[in-house]
Image (cartoon, rainbow, N blue to C red; front, side, top):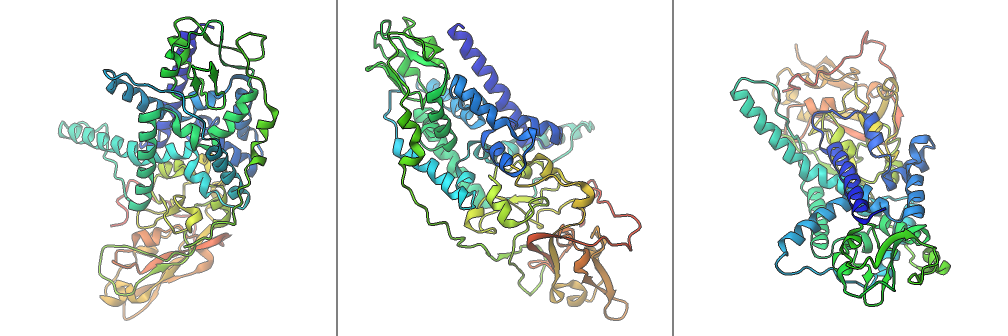
Length: 523
């Protein structure tokens, strides 16, 4: 196949995956169904590996396709499917345009082999020990998900709201304003730090992140040593002009010695179009060409055994961080949550922390925005993973989207009727903060919005009634906490269950109450 066509195909495929994945994380219009979402992430390597470990089904075998493609054609996942890789290409392309007058050189760099193998081993060892914290931080799909959710989504919200305002002025009601309900500075700062790091690396040296830090890039890179097709230099035609090395975004072409480090080559095919003599080509790797001296080195495939890194374990330095609940009206008794609330379908906090990669797809998909990135609410090993923030929203009684879209199996899909009985936590009532007691006035917002009527009102003083929580009916959805009007400390809040339980169905209710998301809820 001709070189320009290969490059055009690679660019077209990259754009398709990049646009689809980006829209998945910024979709504020709820246009993408869970079924479509699962198809979009079908070829994302790390989420599918984790989901395969969790639930064996046909939908989890996408990672095997990636492995097969790598053995056949090299790192096509890195070049065309990974959205973070495409983002780096965009950044590097822009950098090249800015540096047009001063010729940009992407010269050959020596491989940081020890760093690559150590980070990959760290990911594997920590995961075997039961934590996904290193995967959370380094998985390229999850990193891009956080970028899209934190940076691109707010831009779309701003554009939507501006358009809605303009159209509303013209009395055209095609669009409605979208309200981002929460902002958490520390998770945002961590995401911003990673963005700056990757931006600088991509601006300076193209795919440097992919070939030094990314564990997926390292794994697929060493697997590509087995690939049947790869980019090779034909020695008899090579002039050592360095044109291919200057265009190599992976810095893996040593034109002086006519060698290519196949473990770092991301098959971008830029080099093929720049060679003046056709001295570099993409072809069957084991043909008997004179110029092909690279042979399989079986010993190099034992890279996992060559790194003697031993990890004692990360201590959960703040596994029970007591998070002060912020509200907006006067109250006096401080309220602290000892156990964070994990999403329905996560089964338990330990299981969730071990399997979630913090890609934030569920955060973007959650219609009530109750799912928010954590800092230390789960402890250090659960940093950035989603938790229920009932100041921002509540878990909709009629919704199970988070389990339907989760690509790793960290949040399992649950039938709606069963989800309505999953007890994420229990409501705790703080009487001294309740305005029924402090201001001698009626309220009942918590009971009114409790979908299971676990919170009901009982006689208090005179004609006043005050909330009482019946644990056996409570599912920990947080509607009561979200509805409570008092601040700075809530009069009712959800204490998470470390392991999810099943609540009893309230037979007093003839029909479970549905929450209308269009209604102003609750004040």
